[in-house]
Image (cartoon, rainbow, N blue to C red; front, side, top):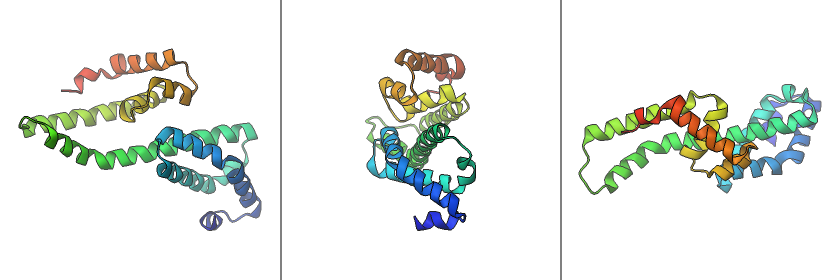
Length: 180
């Protein structure tokens, strides 16, 4: 709390921040945990979200209660996804090397590099999508969530999630051009 007090100077805004903390902390943690499936990561995501709230408390104070709740849910989800993405990007080379070590047949270095480059291009193509396609794609293909979980997380029908995954993979990205 002391760290947030150094960011927020105005007493009225500090009071609003404390109210947000008391009111939404548990809901934000549940959203982060549901996204990440890890207790410690969820705590980190919520802490990151509260840091962003503290930095933008002036803007948040102008939101209505309903807008504020929606904003906090989206902010928490995005912080959780960003945290997982940062972790994934840091871990990807090590995982890739381990995967290569586990293969039975000798690995051609050139082939391995092409596979890694194809994967990087696929990640970039997903990043370039419209958020309505990108978010389900990331949750399904990168974070291995089930369609049912994605539908619940984004408040969509399962058929809608299936359609967005199919549309974005088949027609938007053309996944065959990225994978070897």
